[in-house]
Length: 302
Image (cartoon, rainbow, N blue to C red; front, side, top):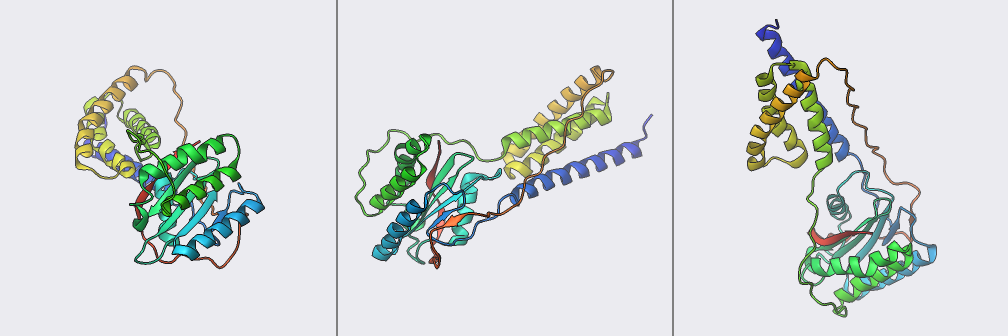
């Protein structure tokens, strides 16, 4: 029979290991993708555009900035490497500081080639003109139809032209009756896999001690979920009984089938933390003017 002191020691060791594993998993995601350098108005790190298109876009965007100081930049990357598109886009503009200080008239067109995702990030000063709704229409109706046909050059050219037309008040579009429904943020799949791994091991350690396993699960599930979704009181409190119930069921199931052999779940694969190399820019000497961003814009996929 296992003594109480030994049980407490096992509980503490397991929770410490689980918490460390969860924090390591989150840290790997946070380091997954370095922010690329701003080398020009067109930063084609995914090499999606032809040299002629890059040069054409560079000239058009330079003329735009000269005319009214608006800074519009294009960034293509091979992959997000597990990063959230909106979060990464905001990190880029916060570092690049597109747009002029106090005017906040910067725009970023970000394209992740292998993920088949793109986003228009809009500075504070242009949110009333280049609205989320209009940005979404440009992505859905102008850029992605070309991308689906493999016409990356034309898609970017058309998208940039539409953004410039909106900024200058020349773009005409009908308002949509309803906005698109966005998927919730957060690594839900990773969280579910991780929690199943935790429940399996809790059940394995405590075997037929269903109440003990359920109690530990009721504490571990909300704490570990907060690492993935952020801490929110309502979610935290709701997950306590959910974790208790899941731990009880898992322990019951494990106790019933403990006589049969089972496979151990595999570990989590690491994310590469490389930067960007081999990309092509269309020129040098370009830098942000100190503009600010607050998450305005729209995202899409093809």
